[in-house]
Amino acid sequence: MLENATRFYKTMQRRKTIREFSDRPVARAVIEQYSLAAGTAPSGANHQPWHFAVIESPSIKQQIRLAAEAEELDFYTRRAPPDWKEALAPLGTDAEKPFLETAPYLIVIFGQKHSEFDDGLRLKNYYVPESVNIATGFLIAALHHSGLATLTHTPSPMGFLNEICGRSKDEKPYILLVVGYPAEHCQVPNILKNRFTILHLFYRQCFNYGQSPIVPKNDTYSKAEIYSP
Ligand SMILES: Cc1cc2nc3c(=O)[nH]c(=O)nc-3n(C[C@H](O)[C@H](O)[C@H](O)COP(=O)(O)O)c2cc1C
Image (tube, rainbow, N blue to C red):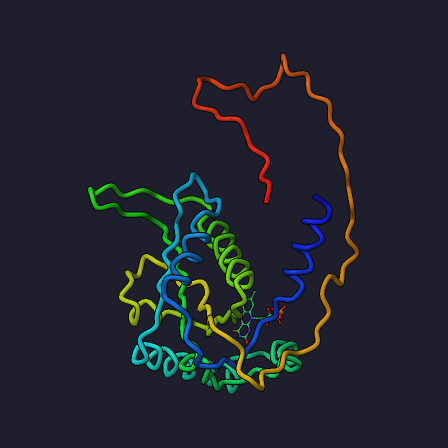
């Protein structure tokens, strides 16, 4: 198990946000499988309050680039407070976003306050940001595991994505994920990870099973399995 944990850490350690993509194609079926992997994420009451809009159409990517660059230009020249610009400086970001057209896929992750079903059922969703962000983390990790690179992009504000992707105003775009392979010349900033000391707190707790408040009320429980990769 320690070997697996170490291997997983080493794998995740190699993930880097990239900002220069090649146009090397990626099979749609691969993206579909990784989107399904993201959909296995835990969510409030299992309502799965997310929608992944996967975009590969060049004309829609161009629309997104134009709208994102307009917002980003306003951000960098007018709205960004000096401390934010200072924080971004080492990353070398600016208002130019050519990767929005170069990368083979853009995935817009929307959060849904309500879920609507074909039979007319409408459910209120709970813990929407938490659930959406966990699913996005699953997606980024899964794509990285397959050898694909990502950029977690958040042009601000992102309302234009509802219109371009044809999603209702009730949904909120959280992340515009850029997916593909790094460009030949792509470089990543050398940044520090795990800069905080990890505090290991181990608790050993003894339960009196006879008095446990968590008792199965019926037989709909299954035994929790230990996943063995
Ligand atoms: C919520 C969120 C929003 C981000 N927005 C942007 C963005 O709009 N543009 C960008 O170039 N990078 C963006 N990033 C990427 C971060 O800059 C990057 O994750 C960070 O510098 C650490 O680098 P790493 O991902 O290579 O470890 C964002 C990351 C997160 C988690």
